[in-house]
Image (cartoon, rainbow, N blue to C red; front, side, top):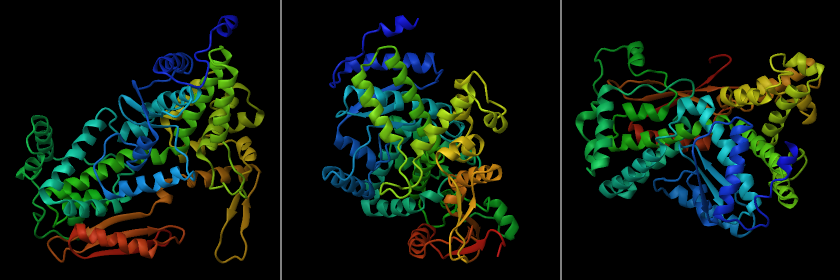
Amino acid sequence: MQAAETARTPLFDGPEWTFELMGKARDAIEEIALGDLGLDVYPNQIEIISAEQMLDAYSCVGLPLMYQHWSFGKHFARDEALYRTGRQGLAYEIVINSNPCISYNMEENTMAMQTLVMAHAAFGHNHFFKNNYLFQQWTDAAGIHDYLAFAKNYIAACEERYGPMAVEEVLDAAHALQSQGVFRYGRPPKPTREELVAMQKVREGYESGQSVLDIWTDSTLGRDKLEMVEDADYSARRKMMNLPQENILYFLEKHSPVLEPWQSEILRIVRMLAQYLYPQKQTKVMNEGCATFVHYYIINKLYEQGQITQGAYMEMLHSHTNVVMQPEYDDQRYSGINPYALGFAMMQDIRRICQDPTDEDREWFPDFAGNPDWRGVLRDAWANYRDESFIQQFLSPHLIRKFKLFTLTNDAELPNLVVSQIHNRAGYKAIRRDLAKQYDLAYLEPDIQVTDADLRGDRELKLTHTVRDGIHLDEDDQEEVLKHLRRLWGYDVRLDAVEASTER
């Protein structure tokens, strides 16, 4: 069997790529990805784009279609200037969580790099997007293209009817609040029957060419924003409006006294896209670790089978090594832990624990240490965890030592930093817990919730920021965002800070 594999001729010989060569490489990669690793992927759509098109994709957060906004042009101008002056490189590829899965490959790539990025994006990321529970729960891979087309055309129609400045004002405010425009801990509320009817009319009108704006401004939305129970007390009012509410954009969309239906729909578009991208923020280490492990395994298999030359293999390994490099803390390139480095190392470590466990591994990971099906263990991890839970469950003492991790306690009342956790049994558990916490968005992003709004009274919107570890909001940013919030609400907005530990 080994002799037959090594007798295969190389897929390509030389740096120049052609579509025929890429097709042959894709088929060879697919054979290993599906037949050997057992990956489950969406159909692939691989597109070749120029550097300028890649910069354009950067500016629109990697989505194939996007509405117009000045901030996207600003990002494009900045990235282009950095790229043209050699101060910033471009990604070899961008991959989109959709069905079919769209991968953008740079036309400047050599054939070796095209092979590498196909394995990385079209199969590694693709498998993760299709199978991880967060993407299954929160995203609609099959419907995202239609929704993006609807959003682009809807906002263009709003600009034509109401003017670019009016639309820009709403988009500016929605973008300022989009990080607080996602549901984090449960499924979004189901739309009402009236809203389902209205959305169906939108789809029918969009297909028939009827004005989208005429439909969304129709009374079928059924939202008289002042129609509240007249004698509702504080408790009943909060229950009626589902308070406290973490998704501020959702609350504004449903309850703002001043927004027109078309403005509410723009808020909905922004929060839907923010929700679509939210799982990627929660799985950076796992997603990149999965894709990097997959491409590394596949290129090694291709080399063992004689399907890539030694020169192409060395070029791929050079790129791979650069991607997973972890600079030391005193290196000018250091900017924290490299998610590619940590993710790839953890995937490799899981395979090691399955194939060649030590006594320490058997003690720490009795459920899978020595399991001959390391592929199944990895697929289960890719499907059922996000970054913080993955690190909490799978980071080994072996990797803690390899990465030289320890915990520093920064107490404002002490003159020096304190090394509080080192490499011992208790220290390993604490280091793993502390590192996992750094990837938990519940701690990384401020917890701000709508807690009250009396639409029958003074209409003041009340929000509460739960402060953790004494970290308050930046005053300048806070005031700028509150200006946008007041613009969308139309009345006074009050923000209180409450200490999580004392509730004061």
